[in-house]
Figure 1 (cartoon, protein in one colour):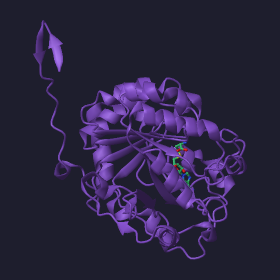
Figure 2 (cartoon, rainbow, N blue to C red; figure 1 turned 90 degrees about the vertical axis):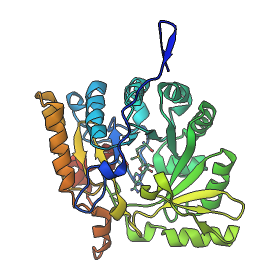
Figure 3 (cartoon, helix red, strand yellow; figure 1 turned 30 degrees about the vertical axis):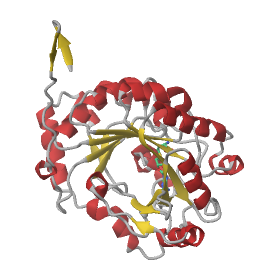
Figure 4 (cartoon, rainbow, N blue to C red; figure 1 turned 135 degrees about the horizontal axis):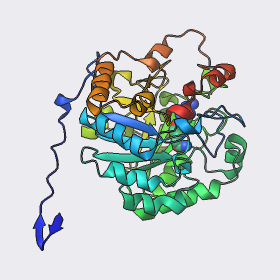
Length: 363
Ligand code: SAM
């Protein structure tokens, strides 16, 4: 409610678009969900994402300002996007992130504003992010064992991640989620421990199949623990596991959700063995304003240069609408058909074009 001269006036918001109005691609998938990578930098070196010590970084001058990100977000929401997720790199390395959150939160068409983070800096920032209008947080937590994190992500700061999770809980975010990439021989013996940890922290864990994208240059099929295998392991421990039927917001979500006998829920993102391209409504903007229509896409659309050379919002909207209407991408499904599948890129190819990196595109 807005208060003016002692009167309380209702704030009139534009009606949020119905899904039927949304811009759709060639497979009738709506333009509905936008991932904004706010930096390509990260303070972890996870083996499956960013294993090298040094990288070819995006030039600093190419990084979008908060005003540019906000403007792009408004154009996308004018075309039907309702869900926005901040990611990276590590989004909390971007200076003054609550200011960006507050700008996006003011956009009445955004009805779900979330962030994916490794949690290292969340302890200090959770309350400010919540106050700025961030609604949901997903924290990546692959292991409960500090020594494993040290070996796998080259970081001794496991305690900071746990502190970040506690701070997120206390800050009152809706539906706290924990992401765990499951890799054979690394953390596949921790599935039940992660479920128990999530339950104790009023969170829901989502197990992610190890993908062959971007910086996963050491990927091989034998390291992937499939959804089927995870469910078998968990059923041996917990008994019958019931699949939950997707409703409303969940029907395009990447995770399939399951319920244990005692009501505890968890999700599995089976991007490798059961890809969900058919319902994928996501696209991604890198920190330098390159728009990717698929995590596996070879090239993206440069929005930054257009922004910086005086393009109007209408012109941007036309470009985005027409590009989305021509979208045919089914990257993960096409990978299923590749014989002798190995990592998508080798390190020299990533160095030649850092836009191929997962930490640039945002996971
Ligand atoms: N730094 C933040 C974080 O750690 O959550 C956000 C960026 S990170 C690229 C986003 C998500 O992508 C994380 O949950 C991460 O585990 C996931 N991810 C990165 N590489 C992956 C891979 N090869 N397979 C599956 N998931 C991956």
